[in-house]
Length: 171
Image (cartoon, rainbow, N blue to C red):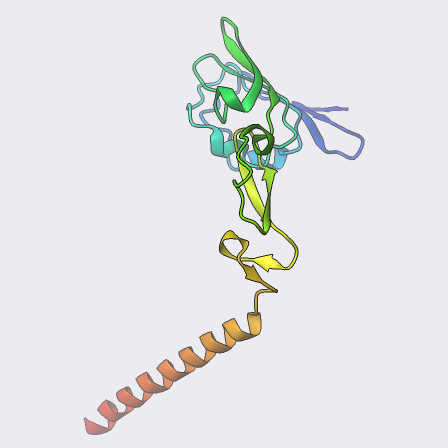
């Protein structure tokens, strides 16, 4: 179903986005809302070349049409097919970076690789693990964290209050 420059499915989820000739210099702050799009047309826009972070989370994107002078996000190796035309270029078939690197140790032992957009990937910790490189087992202890933070704040506050009170009595 068409709605303005969007193609939506029956649930209202964006499948296609036609933003050609909109004078866009960058996709804008609301662009991540279109992360479900399968096809996006951005041709005939004065876009900046650095678009990699703009497509963070666009794991379903399969066709991207860009101005001739703008590189495909993630580079040419992030796509199965990059075709150059006179006024635009088409990036088709987003590759899964997790499957194409051949490096089994991209993610730590307790984590797994997941695609996160063209040329992007993320490591997701296995159940029961968290933290840097998924090395901490169990859940993050909020009680210990806020207990230490609260007691330290209270101690420093009492110390500062006491030192200021002595100065007030002395004068």
